[in-house]
Length: 189
Ligand code: FNR
Image (cartoon, rainbow, N blue to C red):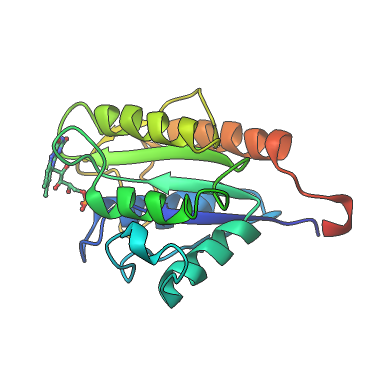
């Protein structure tokens, strides 16, 4: 069966992260031809341009996983009206050395859940700004700004019943966007 391999990047390192839960739950709404692999960013060193010619093993591992992905899914909280530093750190690592930006051309979607009513909208706008510069093709609509409330997740960790139609609609658009913009070559299938 044809498979689109999606790299998932979560912007929270918190043990009980709502965004981690969302990342785990949302992929269950995707069709079977999509597979998802979380790309870890917690073990990356702080970006330092001095290391561009001698990148750490964790950086090379992350960049390799991004290179292999047919699409990307960012699921991030909002920190102080922007994206968390750990996510920006990963974006910077993947963009360097200057001529080796691994993000370029990848189709991507952005999701985020916060406890605030604006539901990560500011963080998502900031992330769109960075990803635009990095030449990532980000799904424009629908947007998904999610506030954490009881019932967002069901007991078994899936998306709760009330939120499911909204999230399914988002996933259906994301799947179409990746298919339209992925550089999956014929030999891939
Ligand atoms: C937050 N939080 C937050 N929420 C929000 O809606 N807008 C914001 O600007 C911020 N800023 C912010 C800064 C910092 C440093 C922290 C730790 C938290 C609250 C945030 O939504 C909440 O902690 C979420 O639970 C974080 O997501 P995870 O870790 O549950 O995925």
